[in-house]
Length: 385
Image (cartoon, rainbow, N blue to C red; front, side, top):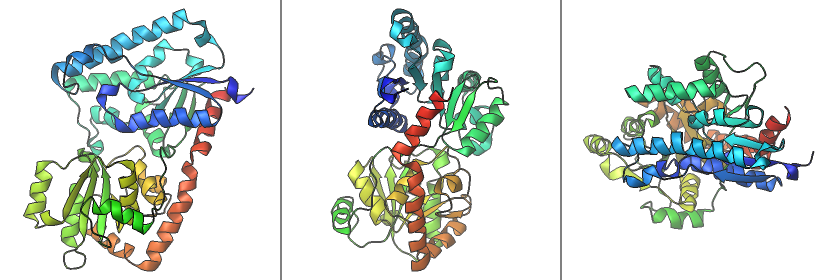
């Protein structure tokens, strides 16, 4: 069988939901398949009902998007399968890019359809697990049970980490089909991350308000509670007198309560918020930071960990799984509930020998997530059946 005979149809997320990481995952998977001479296309749920609302994340707008995602798009899938005989070909495969869309599984050929499970945080949160830091409403609990029911029945499934697979097996109570092919296939890099030269990075970070040669901590991510952004302030407070650098938050804007807390600790003038940086700026920040700090309480994978390593940043991460798994020991770890532990670990990162060793190990670890390597595992998952 030749790879150019294969055809993958990737079912991506609803665009108005603005789930950036999931959008990048679908586009990266398509492009990676193309590099392997495999035909691939992306199908997005049609925006119809959701177009009648300005806010698709709350109230009536949220319910309108549900109509698009769980009523209109399934109907379109059913019609496409009925009207186009090409989709019945043995070498045409369907892949649902996000586990939250698992209800689509029932509409597609079971032996040729797979799904990626990025995490089970919302599912576990809806089931009452507090360690996820993901609360669910009454309707959200129903939705997550529905998602889990279909996810558990998938014959072909990839989980992005051993930790995510372990949690999925636990919550699904090993109810997967007897002939199921469930494998761990990590995320690959979805863009080019590299150690940017000092002169180039200096120009870009200067535009963010960081002078050349300044020492700064960097964290990247959203403002979700599980990201544990507050601990960077507590950590800097613990380091008072030992380190007086900047605390840089890249990603989603800081919420007012965190800004007020920084002011209370006397750190407001040391806090920088770089909202939604472009890719080159992000690479510059990773390349120039004194340390990349990832204190998350809960993750399914944690893309910023390997992005930082690929740019030559020493990494200080939460000791909660899957962070040690993804970094493969090429980082220092601390309790995400203990700012003093993070502060102590950071001081160790300032030791030149330890710092250089972790950076070298980080570069080596990144080889596991090379696009070609990961997408070949993905293709093999489908062909082994």
